[in-house]
Image 1 (cartoon, helix red, strand yellow):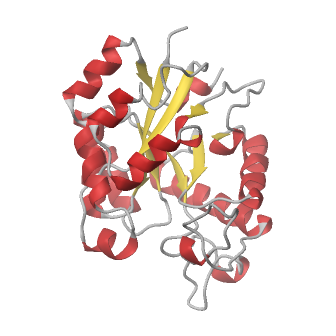
Image 2 (cartoon, one colour):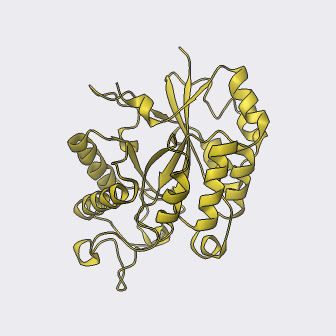
Length: 267
């Protein structure tokens, strides 16, 4: 079985500077998918840049923790503060004792997660002219959000991360390596280097029993908006450097790993 790898640049649309980095990682690196935060102010800029490269697979990076919602804030009360802005992930209630990111008391309801996900899908379509062929969550997730994602996926036929390794009548499994490898998560949060990838055999990619595997990165340039609104700063620059490093592409070629996108999950 020939391994296939989907390489996702998360947070497309976060800021204009970041958007330029994502496009560089696609044009000069191994990125195959740009996952769009359609609610963000820089999302139209991201789509404008991507229009020059129609083969780029743009998916939906459903965002509940940065900026303002697409929905009327009054329709999603569990997700927004008194100013109608999303609560940051640090304000969310932790999902386990090991959750170091979420340290607050906010609990997002299933109904609100479903409403805003569909609203962001509508915005995505308005921006790009088409529905996404995959959607996922940004930064923080809960059982209620996964339930909403799975219901939307079932109703629309669109692949989502909440499916994990499940196969359906129309969709192949896409194995999320970030969910299965602690070294991968640690490297993402401290800043990736090529040796991290090579010395771990692709963070378990070579050992994966799945044909289609997925890796997420945050390749981009940093501007004031990123510095003020994200805990990932230098790490984004590191990811961009790694994904454009010729040694990484050579490693993939040496192991006969085919780069692909989310079109590959549809039967």
